[in-house]
Length: 568
Ligand code: ATP
Ligand code: MG
Image 1 (cartoon, helix red, strand yellow):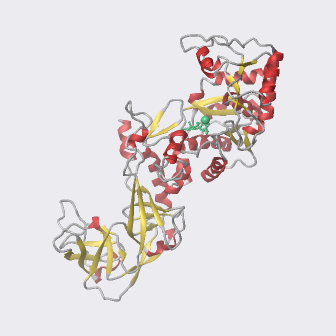
Image 2 (cartoon, rainbow, N blue to C red; image 1 turned 30 degrees about the vertical axis):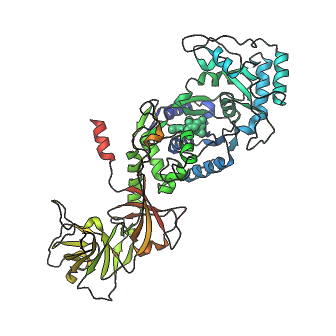
Image 3 (cartoon, rainbow, N blue to C red; image 1 turned 90 degrees about the vertical axis):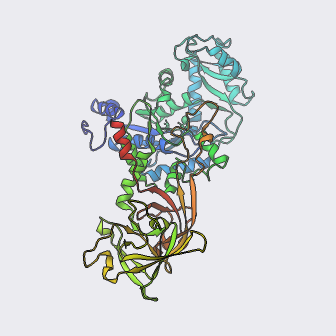
């Protein structure tokens, strides 16, 4: 057995420390078994990634196992579309459940048998109060509840009614099965919680086989036990449910008794994580589907251009604690930049073009200029980019009347064209009577090939360009935060998150001029457009020959500043 003490290159956390202790004490024979238990009622989001990285990460680290288990006990809300997307996303994040793909619905027979066992031991009863009455009888935090008048039904009557519930003899809501615990418990969860309810609805896996469905609190602990889970890790809102988790396992002949540990869920600024709220964005067309690049879903982030590695790094960086907090979206973006800076090839593209004519450049000449694909990692090689008499540069890189500290191109001024030549602006052509610039006339200095003057003369700016007759015209989508407020889940009274949608979260530019080599970009391929941002060829709409690019993340990093402020 390996002895674990020092964290090996990864941040420690309290759950990891518990596992270290358990392994060293040879608890569970030193075995570590975790699970990731999504409900297939929506797509996975960045919050789920935290849970996935934690559960699969701990299993990997301690030579254990992590199961993927669908917690599918809610027919009606659940769907195979979600089951499929969840598997795809977990794999994409880089984790492998091997042959351990499970469904809570596969345990329906065994769960039913456990419920019968509870009844036989006088630990559960069929209650015929209505949902409203059950709530009234439950009491409050300050007042004890009242016993249900059905609480003392005989075991025989309970067995008979529960079987008839299963056989479909009763309508929805007529009866439920409840645990017989303590209506005066200070923990509301323990006041005779419902274990089974009647739902006459088809299930995406069991069809019409069942008309009663087990509740989360009954299903989850027993599923963990059936699978031999050792450490059942969930989010803080289940803290009060732990007592019930343990009660159920203590009161049936469960195969083993896993331990539940709670950690704080991830809250990320400028976005929402609730699947119900995300579903509404999709259904009411605020976004273009679950995989809209503005969504915090894993498929949305993927389409935006996020790498799986950057998300795993992010989850490592935020750590695991027991206190709720809000993580700034800038940290996620920072982790993405860190990764893309290393791996994304550089190209030159012009998003808002203006024509530049080099008056003294030979009419039909084309030079193929050698450009580095990465400024530091020379192993990424070079590419050849065509240069000719007519070019495009960014409108932003020229000012007819430059303000102070503006060092880019202006009348009479010389700048460097990256990898090419020094050019000097000699004239500006405008639409008569307006200020709209149609062409900038420049001269180039043939003695500055490669962008360096032989006489040592310096320029203050280097700008990017593309050759007008060679470049590719394409659409580029600029994405911004989906919400204008930091915490859309906690807003002024009378308003809700939909009131804070950023109306400018998507800007589509249709007349961008890209370096010709980008023609063959494959969907999902990422680049840095030099001086602008990282971009990714859209997974759905980009086709070889006709690329569509999404802005993944701008180059400017806000994280350093935020971190400094937090340390103060
Ligand atoms: P929602 O409230 O949005 O419906 P959920 O918690 O019900 O989310 P599940 O499918 O039940 O979603 O979640 C699967 C697992 O992922 C659970 O263990 C849950 O605790 C965890 N999880 C969900 N959201 C987050 C989050 N924001 N941060 C960390 N873990 C999360
Ligand atoms: Mg849930």
